[in-house]
Image (cartoon, rainbow, N blue to C red; front, side, top):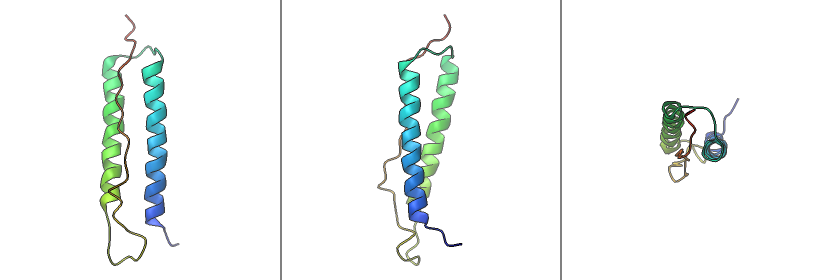
Length: 88
């Protein structure tokens, strides 16, 4: 099976950014009974994966014609959670 690496990476980046937007919206908008520690852990883990996607997007191979290009210009979402309810 032949893979289209550029398309896979572009689709993954797009889906990840949509997930980030929705997660950030939900966690900033609604009061959940969740601790700041849990919020920080969610943000940290999400942003760690964002950094991994950035790394994958930077991989390229000049010998692979039209399918393993440098995609480091793709923006990858990182989240910032500002609102939480710690149950107090």
